[in-house]
Amino acid sequence: MDSTGFRAALDEGGVLVLDGGLATQLEAQGADLSDGLWSARLLTDDPAAITEAHLAYYRAGARIATTASYQATFEGFARRGLARDDAAALMRRSVALAETARSIVVAERSAAGIVTPALFVAASIGPYGAMLADGSEYRGRYGLSVAQLREFHRERLDVLAGTGADVLAVETIPELEEAVAIAELLADRPAAAAWISVTCMDGGHLRSGAPIEELVAALDRSPGVLAIGVNCTAPEHVEEAVTRIAATTRLPVVAYPNSGEGWDATERTWTGTGAGAGAAEGRLDAAAARRWRAAGARLIGGCCRVTPDQVAGLATGLAGG
Image 1 (cartoon, rainbow, N blue to C red):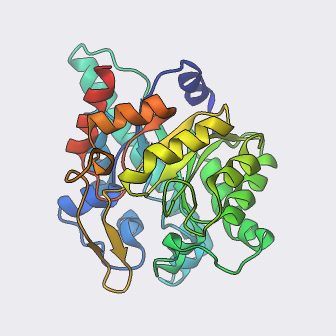
Image 2: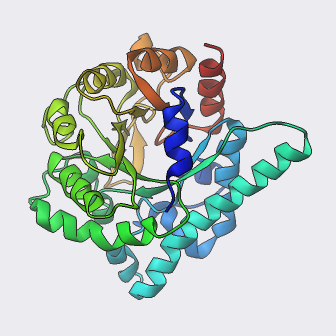
């Protein structure tokens, strides 16, 4: 991993547009993601579909593609009969697929005479709860110690940090202990760099109930942590969360909410109403992105159920001031 270019882009002081829901786009392309491995299943079954999904977001204006490794764990792959070496190879493949998409878009723009800013690949590291595939990432409180969570994440983090990814996207973390465990791993690996984003129940608390200021205090000076933020959180909570984080750290702040719908892990379906209706705080559009930027967000995009069209709207709105 060489995060030099990504760090330089952060130092420029502007906003970097993230992609949206990878699984959302894969389903729009016709993929069946109903099993426990979610989009990670396609690393074996249909890798070309993953590249196509990354292309959709890059072409929509995202500067960062987040890999299909969120649910890719040694434990999850072992349940499918895959040995550890094979599982690690699939994790590395997730990065290679995003790199392929980036190369295609760069070539397309070069052929068209378009000067494009640097594009990046973020290797996704999902929470312990994602491996359980029972909705635990939206509850936390696993009953595991920091040491146990550190051990769970250790090997996967090493594999992904050993790829050509520009940064690790440690995302949808529901509890403080898990964020601390990953920060400790990063501190022991000088070449590794990550953003850590948590999923929140409201504008001030992680899903586990911990105040968001405690998260910032725990991570603020951790080596290897390049940014702190929120993801897979309802849009109406993002502005407050970003404001609270920005008030207590000088690190860049990340904001990429979901659509506002809820995940029913038993039925494996989304419930409720998506962003776009109701009060402005509940929308996911250019105006919302500008509010998040004003509150202090520097990396802005979407998570589950956020489409390339919505990312295009965010990118256009942010570019327009």
